[in-house]
Image (cartoon, rainbow, N blue to C red):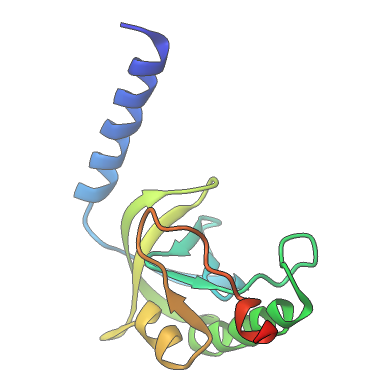
Length: 136
């Protein structure tokens, strides 16, 4: 087998192990932005199924996106800072776990979408355009 095929198989096996893992409890140490935080253990978690606007000029496509990203970060901090969460890992992306996250009985992704600071982002779909609204 080629090296590429072996790497793909290893990656798939790792994802299956992650998906089969039971949910973990953790305490949020720091909210990075509207869809990513760090547990006190140091592990970075990307909330699965949602997207929040970017906060950095090098990543955002317009100034309006940065403002939306800052609002998303503020809301995520209000929800998560220092709180205990349940993390159900579903994959990994950019050196961080991708997970469904629960705060008590509430789904954090749903809370962020309901408050208007994040949008649903189905898996394998193109990145959302946060600037389209501001142009219209």
